Length: 121
Image 1 (spheres, one colour):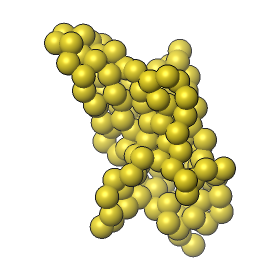
Image 2: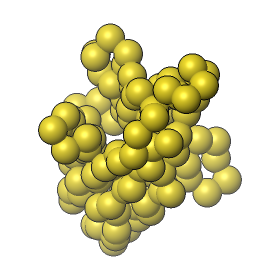
Image 3: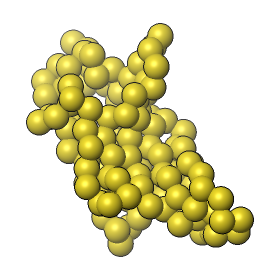
Image 4: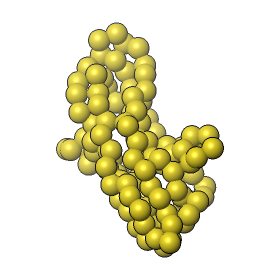
């Protein structure tokens, strides 16, 4: 199994920045894609940024130019640098990893516990 542990959320003023981290640990799960979703109160979960299986990146239109996803393969960690934050970025941010169970061969998705981000003055 793989475990995802997020950190870096918090309260920030509009225009501020935060960097989220997601560290993957464990074994028996071959990860082929990772990224970040978010869910605001009363709204559906939406994909914010991700590394695809081909290694390219995808971003939600509303965060393009403000958010950057990056990774440190040596640390099995991905990051989400969020700049120029807006109140509408307020949400719980979830890290996910898509991959294959080495025990069963089945594909699956693993989720972190979520880290809250609040953008408010």
